[in-house]
Image (cartoon, helix red, strand yellow):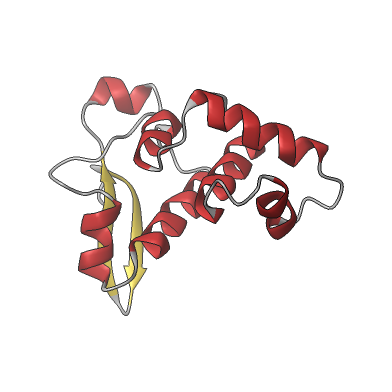
Length: 128
């Protein structure tokens, strides 16, 4: 594995870097940021998948413990500190913890991927 990338995605036998590390200092701090246009839109184009699917790849990697800068991912997904709190509050208050129930209870104001992102952050006790 190339140490310059925080995680990789394999699609149809081709490996793609999702997030490139910027510096040793950021790497030591456990943060990685997109570089050279490697954002969800670019990745989705390279993989020939919908942008939402590329977002899911990143969210899944975050949930699995990849060293990603969750605050930057939040920015990419347009999750503000306020919306993070609203989504988190609904997740915590929801007894069945089902994505659809949380989405419905929030009046469908947030995307499934925004909710998935908050769930991934909760796994690791990340806050915005």
